[in-house]
Amino acid sequence: MNDIPAIGSPIRTRAILNEYDLHASKRLGQNFLIDLNVLQEIVQGAAIGPDDTVIEIGPGIGSLTEQLAKAAKQVVAYEIDKKLIPILSETLRPYKNVKIVNRDILKADFSIFAKNQSLKIVANLPYYITTPILFYLLNSSLNFKSVTVMMQKEVAARLQAGVGSKDYGELSLAIQYRVNVEIILPVTRKSFMPSPNVDSAVVQLTPKENFQSFPHEEALFKIIKASFAHRRKSLVNNLLYYFGKNDENRTKIERSISETGFDLNIRGERLTLENYEQLVNNLSENMIFSKE
Ligand code: SAM
Image 1 (tube, protein in one colour):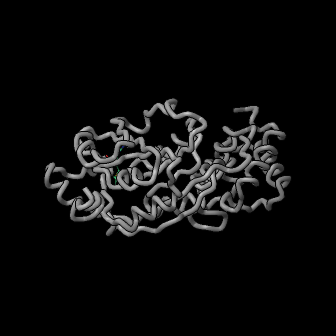
Image 2 (tube, protein in one colour; image 1 turned 90 degrees about the vertical axis):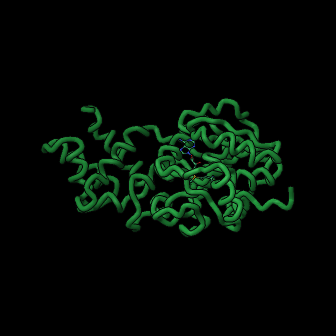
Image 3 (cartoon, helix red, strand yellow; image 1 turned 180 degrees about the vertical axis):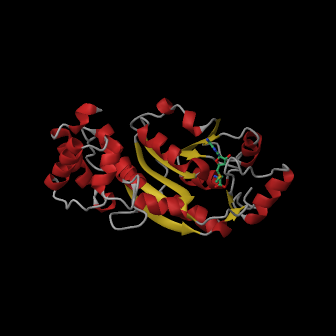
């Protein structure tokens, strides 16, 4: 067994694709990792150890799963493509601590995972549903220690961006509300087979310590969305579009922005998450939401 090259080596990946006459599905975002250094850096970056249960999304032909299985207590991998299931049971046969679930991750039932186990999520994500997957995980009952996932470089930049960056926006705020974000590894398109048209990055999300949900959470995200709707317009104008353009709304919006400590020409991209929370508190005190 030790003589067989790793699944994620280019030679073995090619052999598996040939043996099963497998054509990577573009529609399902199938780009297999063929760079052993990257695979090992993901496992190290996620600090996978013998106490960890790993949830993997989209094992493909098992390249990352194999490296995870060597380090973790167990790996539960969700793969939507039923063509891959018999291939995975063959490639991962030596690893008794791997369980493959043939299921859409967006329909996964995570109640099987005990609250007290050390749970880490690791994936080379299917890029066409990167953000739905992240929100599905964040909104689930999973008590994870970290989420370490490969995604398109541009999406990684938006997740990590802060005030002042061109990438800063609704997605940055929605994710940073819940978790800390760190880009841990840039990855070029050459590390995949077939090679995608974009470069990638591995991002790590960790739960915020002492996270408490904001009392007007729904309003907060509506206001953030509205504030970035027209990036070149001022915050006042974006909020007027949202609440309806009339003098009464203008007065309330301007008062709330001033009371939050900002100039009336300010644009939404200048406000931090804390600023948005203050603004929404103020808007609700000024009773603008009563019309919603
Ligand atoms: N982990 C493998 C690797 O690194 O080589 C494959 C990664 S590939 C980028 C993404 C994988 O996600 C594919 O195997 C694809 O079939 C699977 N996938 C796509 N949509 C999915 C979904 N909704 N739920 C679960 N798996 C999905």
